[in-house]
Image 1 (cartoon, rainbow, N blue to C red):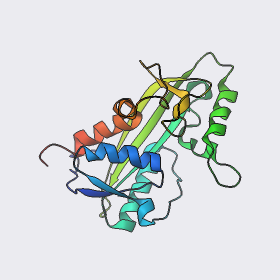
Image 2 (image 1 turned 180 degrees about the vertical axis):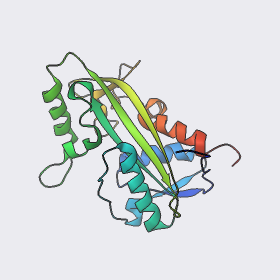
Image 3 (image 1 turned 90 degrees about the horizontal axis):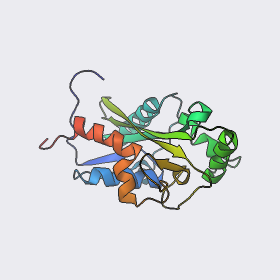
Image 4 (image 1 turned 30 degrees about the horizontal axis):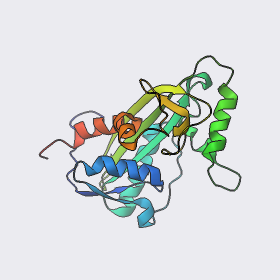
Length: 207
């Protein structure tokens, strides 16, 4: 985006998610700024089809849909897990790798797929990406991208995270995202990196 960023003045916004883990992490980040949230799931809003091919594109799509449906400023994220040996896959298709024939998501099977495809590579590099988008009912959007780099490990460890967290160890850490204390994970995660950029642009003190 070019030009000045729009400050977020609302104290209550819609989180465009039906994912309890994402809702918890984003709500905790916003709470530090005195902002409370209601989720799209709580409002009974439909889940839009993610048709974009980038994290920013999908986050923007979801935020705009939630803002239009709720009449509130909405924040959406789109995040994914990428593996260097798989040329960045699963990437924006991270959730799709976990979808089962009955529609449920099984991340244990998804992590197993990553391990099967990447096990013969010496490159264990991996990273999480998170795009955060703020959308206003008038159509204005602010979008930001953050990443957390590290390596993938097998077998998965820990039950504190969600998704692919149990197979990812961030740079400088020995515990997986599934083992880390939530406060520590929030401080170093891809979501935190994206949120720091968003906060600097749109949550300036005194506004």
